[in-house]
Image 1 (cartoon, one colour):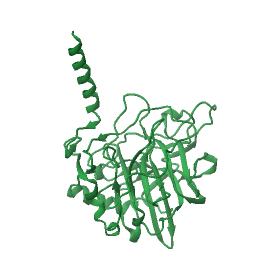
Image 2 (cartoon, rainbow, N blue to C red):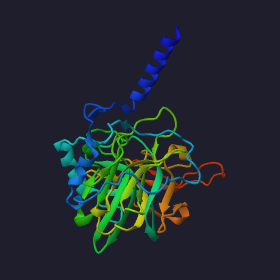
Image 3 (cartoon, helix red, strand yellow):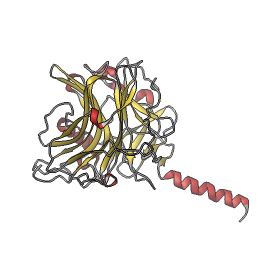
Image 4 (cartoon, helix red, strand yellow):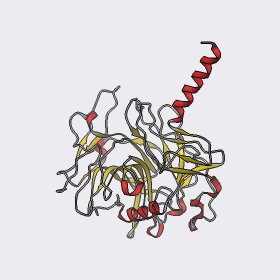
Length: 367
């Protein structure tokens, strides 16, 4: 085989491998028959039609630097799908009428992480409050597939928010299995916000979130890696200069990817900071009272590698300094030990990465 043929073969193999996770440069990018992203002019994206954003000027990148734990996560796999939109455009998930209607339904039922109101919902995780104000957080979350019915939801998320005079503002992001919302049983990345006048929304279904990356998505199905952990490392961090709330992909040994942000104008009580941050697993039971599985669907055990787990929790304090939290500094949350569990991570040797905590469970009818 001559050199030219070998070169062509190598180029073909590389292109084939990349095509599995990269959608080509077209005005619309289709992941499958049901998942379509439109490449929209960044200055004409739907969110800019929000009444509170009439005079908003897009912030193209955050002013803060990368978010890194003291111990880098050994797993270098990045569990994300990239959509290659042309320069000057950003990927926006195409909304069907059914998708919008389902999103409105689930937005009304979405669990408020700042309160103890949990009718039909159960949580397992940790929270930090009382040492604020805070300007954000990031956490490493293992990702799992779950058997969830169309009238249930199960997710793991990080959140930041405040409650004042019966008003609630918060932002969440992480992963979710919600067949009714997304139209399939896959595990998806998601974002959710609740702001001024009680308005709230998932992803980019209604105006609010400003997409900045032309390749990386706020919401999309999470692929299975060829090796290593299936995990995400999302963040919610307030920009010290603009006050906008950014979300990024925290990456190992490389620059974080800024996806976009929720403008500060959307909120009436977290324009400057929040009072509470946390990371939890959450489930929404069906109307019949059956609760879905959480985490990886199993109660956490001494073998942490067999459990859903959180490896790091980074918080951003009142001086915009990043601090990695210890489990003993956090409030633990578990409202149904019949169906779900929460365990402290084992302390390991200095050179071995530890889990912050493990969680999850099978759900059932007596939760």
